[in-house]
Image: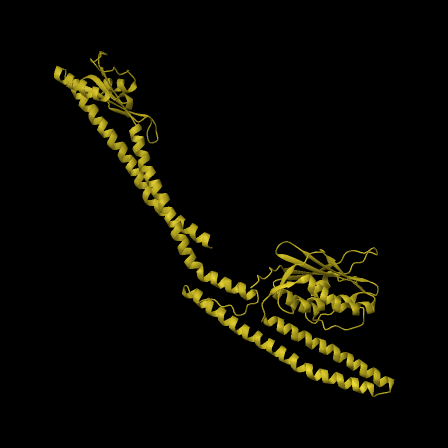
Length: 464
């Protein structure tokens, strides 16, 4: 928009310059032609009058005037004289009898030849008849070089062209200043919208600029405040509800465990165990909601974390559960690499726990879960967790990050449907991305699922 405003402003100034300077330049050019022609014609007429007077003093004056022109031969200006009988005037060049001279001798006509139809040629030629009473006794021709006129012409047009370029440059500079001042409120609104889109609900736009943009800024700020209030209330409600539900759920589970220990009836025990399983699932759901509510609050800042060390720590926690299922967990990556990534405290642990839990849920007995850590340039580190389960279709991958969506597991446990939603929220809060893709094909033609997590590379903290 700034460029369009500058171009429009410069075009407007260019049209105004063309409307005022070009006609003036043409007028000055025409005036230069007329003044030069009138001056030379006047000189030629004077010399023709002197030629018509056959007394010696007039002829001597004619020779002096003509010689003054002819002595400046380097300018290319020459005065030529011819008599009606073809005799030469002493000391003066003889004019050839061309059409202009014949017209002057025959009919007494004055002719002017600029040498070109547009502006002028290299010489201006003026031929004037010399009369003695009613009789034409000769003709005077001035062949004037237009080099000096051309220089003056270039001065006229060049000065105005340089002035126009200078004015346009100043106009472009002023146009840029004016355009930036005019579009500053729009840029501020765009900055606010970008921050708002990135999740910063505290972003507000200054109320500046013309009345229209001020009104728009007020409207957006009001809407942002209302939305921030609503989302804040929702987060507080979820966090409070999740926190308040944890205590009674824990008490209910303990009560069910006590009932199960004191009941001998097999059918009653089965019902109690089923109720206990539902309480456990509800506890996981409440814990997941609490994690999401805390993640959306964005109360902590990302800091450098040694990714490989953290991965090794979490794998050590999950290996006993994997060994119980006969599932191997392998860590791949650069042997000596210890990349740092930017992550808020506790985020990566929860991310790995959720991803490994899902991978173990879908992995068949005897399969392998592969964890890879690799750098992807100086600004990015990639963490991949690949299982050998049934994988996901494209439609399932599109919905996998939705809250409360559950895939098909193999262990019989029922998940909360919040695991991948929590993973994406935590990774996105730390400036990373998470995607799902098919795992590497196996000999039987099947492929599991690979969770690819891209994290920002961190910089070691300087010692204090």
